[in-house]
Length: 394
Ligand SMILES: Cc1ncc(COP(=O)(O)O)c(C=O)c1O
Image 1 (cartoon, rainbow, N blue to C red):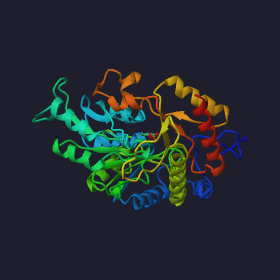
Image 2: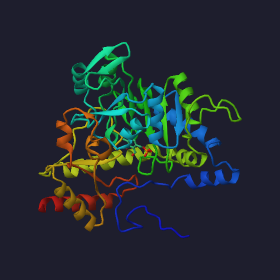
Image 3: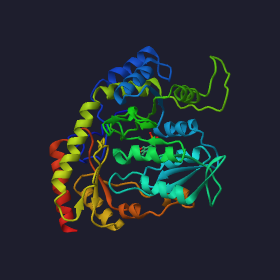
Image 4: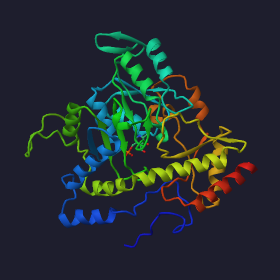
C-alpha cells in the first residue's frame, strides 16, 4: 500500500511540530533484521544499542525497554515502591509520569515547579517534607494520609534539567529514593555531567517525537550493577532459565531488535540532531524574545537538550492560545499547547497536591513551536514571520 511520507514542508504543505529524521542507516539496519530473521528482543541490535547509548550518556549500564513509560515503571519498582505508597512528582509533565506511579499501585503527590527550569522545585519539596511528613520506623510518613513516601521522581521538562544536585540533596536528607523522568533529556547536562554520570537512576524515551526515536522505546540509565541486573530480569518476565521458570512477577518490557536497529542508526546522527535542535531554539529566542507579549523561559546554566522549543505567552488564556494555534494552522504551521497540569487531569484530580503558584502561572502559556531536527531555515523563518504577525494582531 503506498504511504505518503510525513516529513517536512518540501513534501507536505504543513510544517510539522516534531517529526523524526530517518535518512541515515535506518532502512539498511531494518533490512538486516528481516534478512537474519531477528525481529524480537533477541537480536544483536539490542545489545549494540545499549552499548552505544551507555557510551553516549556515560553510564555503566543501560537497560533498553519498549517504551519510556515501562522504563519509569521499572525504576519505581527497583527502588521499592509498593501499592498505597506516595511518589512525589511535579505537576508539569506528560501524563506517563503519573501513570507509571499508578502502575505500581502507589499514588502521585503532585508538587509545584520553579519557573527557571520548569522542573520540580527543591525548596518546595523540602518544605512539604518538613511540614507534611513525619519519620517512623517504616520510613517517611505523610501525616494526613498515613502513606509512606516511597520515592521522588523529578522530570526534565521539555529537556531542561531540573536542579538535579539540590533535588538529590533533599532526597538524601529525608532518606527517600530519587529517580528521574528524563524521557527527553538525551544531550542534557547538569553541572557539565551527562545523565549517566549523575548519581540517581534516569530514564529515556525513544517514541516518535523524541530527539532520537526507535519508533517506540525507552531505557533505564544507571551505574548500580545489582539494580541493572534486577531491572533487566523483571523486564524480561523474570525468567530464570531458558524454559518456563520465573521467580517473581515480571514484565514483557524489552526493546525489540527491530526498534533497536532504528535506534542504532539514529544514534549515529545524534550529535547533528542535537546541534539542529540547539540552533532552532536559539533562533526562536533571538527572533522572538524582543516582541512585546512574548518571552522565553530563563533556562538554568545547565545544558538543555532543547527537545521541544517552548515559548511563554503574555496571557494565560486558553482562548488566546487556541487562537494563536489556529492562526498558525491557517498558515500551514503546526503548533501545540504544552502539557496541562497533571493534578487537574481527570484520573488524578483527587490526589494530593501542593499549592501550585508557578504551575498556575505556566498553565495555558507555553506554546510549542515546530522544531523537527529536519526543520529548514526557510521553514523556521516562515514560523517566526507568521507568529510575529499573529501576535501583533491579537
Ligand atoms: C516527560 C515524559 N515522561 C514519559 C514519557 C513516556 O514515554 P513513552 O511515550 O516512550 O512511553 C514521555 C513521552 O513523551 C515524556 O515526555
